Length: 139
Image (cartoon, rainbow, N blue to C red; front, side):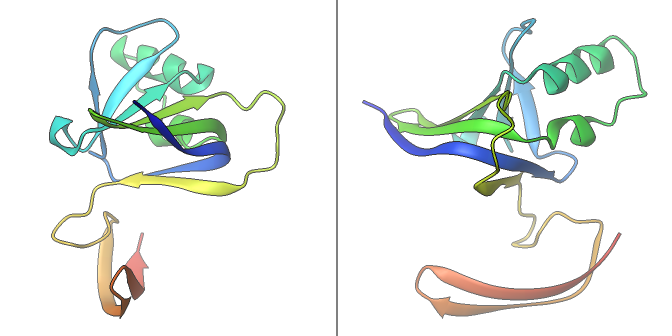
């Protein structure tokens, strides 16, 4: 049985060079990824035209595409929880609806955000489920 955790229009933000691991058969209209690796049980199914085309171009040897620029585009998203983990389905936002939220995907390394260089940071607990943070990040 699956449970829909979120459904709506989002801005997509991928952080980190190795945040996604493509897997499965390469389809014309779909690319599947694991966030991090298969052990996370977080799967992304991307049906958006430009990101899928960019992957095909990169695989074909066209290095002009910056994947994150193509990937970080608005999407209509459905996030489902099921017995095998979490599936995030991303589709083109054809109606150009206002975005309700940001879908932020990435992998924390040693408990830190995957950015180019963190020169200073602090994490402090707010309560049992929340952590406040401040950081100086160099690009």
